[in-house]
Structures are given as structure tokens and as C-alpha cells.
Amino acid sequence: MTEHRLLHKQLKKAKISTLEDINEKNFKKLLQLIEQSYTDYDEDKKLYESKAQLSSLEFKELNKNLSEKVEELKKINHNIQDSIEYASLMQQAILPKLSVLDNFCKESFVYWLPKDIVGGDIYFFNILDENSILIMVIDGAGHGVSGAFLTMLVKAIEEQIIAKIQEGKLRPSPALILEYFNISIKIMLQQDKESQANSGFDGGVLYYNKKSNICKYAGAKTPLYIMYDDELEVIKSDRKSVGFVRTDIDQKYTEHTIPIEKNTRLYITTDGMPDQEGENDSRYGITQFKKLILKNQNLSFTQQGASLQKSFKDFKGNCKQSDDITVIGLSLFS
Image 1 (cartoon, rainbow, N blue to C red):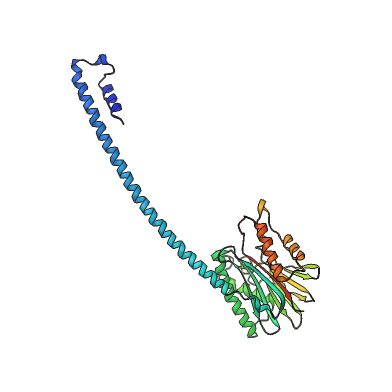
Image 2: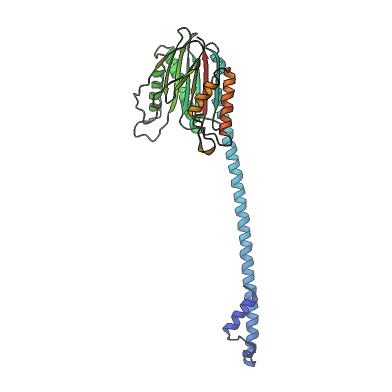
């Protein structure tokens, strides 16, 4: 409030509104009012400046605290990033090398691309003996850190399965292997009908014996694509996932026996590539995936893998990656 407004207020209170109202009687009073108005103004000014100074100090303190919190969060974020990146190295370390397939495949490729630094997709190549191999493709629930935790659990169960097969306690049957995974996940995570936890995976298990030229496959929401010369055949999978609360603990999976002929090529994909979102809310789709396999059938598998990656990146454009991606292509010896 200015000194003029304060003076006006005092004059109004004394009923002095014009020069004519001033007389000898009230002139002294007028001087007192003028003096009082300036005194009031000085006090108001000091109070305002004091409050402003206090607000400035409070702001500086608040800003200091905020800066300290930001630095603290940066350190926490840096530590978390370091941990996740280290976890990524661990996850990549448990993935098998493509060279494991050399004694069973003429050609092969793997396209593995997590959505985040770590992911919920994983695959395994397990040589059982000189003639037979197991290939597993797993699409764990979620992606990122939660998905990666599940892959560690799946890896532990996979090692149990291979040990039991080597000991002769479990047949190398893709259907039995999916059933073993299902029971193990439900027991380990205590996932019954009333459980709050609900985790599991979709995936496929392939057994190949190059001596008998027989391939066996079982899938949980994960079909197998087979190229016979110019024809593409789809081996359908069961519609039940593995391990989830809705999946019964005694769930059975269908096993398909596939004779391997000359020039037979096999493809397994998780849903990451078909479900990828592109411009205008479009999806890559399984139809486009199958068309690409047909189009690339005369290319080497190295070229096919590169073509898949290019097709995915071109379709995705500036959109974010929707999910983890795993595609495996195999040209088996026959």
C-alpha cells in the first residue's frame, strides 16, 4: 500500500475530502494525519521487505534441497542402470552360441532383440548326444527386469530337465518338457487358483534326431513354420500357456512328429515381431511374417536373418519397440 493511499484513508476517516474542509481547528489534526500516514507506510514497507526477504531465503533453501534430491536420484538411477547393464551381460552369457547348431544344421540364424536392456525372451540349444539336439524358444511374461527374472527361473528349470534326460529319468519329448516346465513354475511360484502371482511363458520345444531324420515339436501359443521347397506349412500349437494361474497343473501338450525331407527349413518366432506396432496403429502381423519367409526362401540364412531385421526396422519406423523379439531359422541336415 502506497503512502498516498494511506493518507487518503486517514483523511476519509477525519471527514476531510476538500480544501474547504480544512480550517484552523482541524489543520493541526491534518498534519498529524499526514505524519501518521507516512509512519504507517514505513512500517508496511518494512514488513513487506521482511516477508520478501524471508520468501527469498525459503526459496533458496528449497532450491538447495531440491538440487540435493536431484543429485541423489541421479546417483540412484546410475547405480540401477549399471546393475541392469550387468544383468544384460549375464543374460547374454547364458544364451547359446549359434555354432552349437553346426553339427545339426546346414544353415541357421537367430534374431534376438530385447525391448529394453534385458528381456523376457530366451532360447536354449542342448546337444543330448551326437545325433540329437533340443531347441527351446521361450517368451516369458513381461519384458525388462521382470521378464529377465523369469528367464533366470526358466534357465534353472531347463538345467533340471537336461539333467533328468541325461540320467534317463525323462524322455526328450517336447510335450513332456513343456509339462515339466508348467508344473515346476506353478510349484516354485506357488501359483494356484488363489495366487496373486501370475507368471509363465509361451514357447516351443523342438527335438531333432539327424540319424532318424525325425523332428518332434510341441508349442504353447507358439506355432512352428516349415518350408518344404516352395510350400509353407504351419504346425499349430496348443492354446494354453505354461505356468500361469489359468493353466491347470496337469495340462497336457500336443506333440507333432515331422519327417525331415531334403531342403526342409524350420522357423520359430515369439509374438514380438508379429505384434509390433507401426504407423497408423497398424501391426506387423503373422501374414506379413509368412510372406517374408516365402519371399526369402532362396536366400542364405545369413541373408534371411538380415532381411528380417530390415523388414522389422522399416515397419517400426519411429514407433517404439512393442515387445521382446526372438526369431530362429534352421535348415536341418537331411
